[in-house]
Length: 236
Image: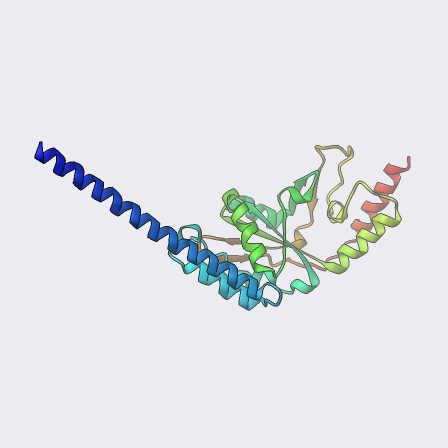
């Protein structure tokens, strides 16, 4: 009987000790979260790209969150490659599981069905926003394809579509040198020119693969022909 009582007392003490340990861990994590929010509040109105990068890397190194940061997405070389000339460009990320698919996009262009934005994620120099978007999409694949299109092209062809009275298409649909779909329905497949594919990144190592033919300012006469074709189809 005395042995059983001793065992019970030992178990109770062990459980109490474990509860105290969990409380300490929880308190430390709460302190870390509160500190993080204070840091964010202090820099959210006046943060530079470098300040945000340093802040996110600091979080990455924290033992509390290290398990969520096992890739090289925040490396300086990676971010600099993605955001190069960001003031002049619209930049998008597309995630894929197979390197063969990433290579195919570099060679042939980015194929998408109906909406470009289903799998192309717009990003900017707001690194906190980029990191959040990355965490929401990284499970779709380790290969990140970078798509970049000049703001001038976007403005020009958006205006041309508007002048032509074409409301059911956006500039992404016409920046192709492939034939546009003849039937405009939910199954329509478009193919953005490979000129707008900057390259891709393997996020586990940070290795960068560049597209030698990349040209975000590429303006093919076919693009304007695509608008003329859409005008004809909209006004039979």
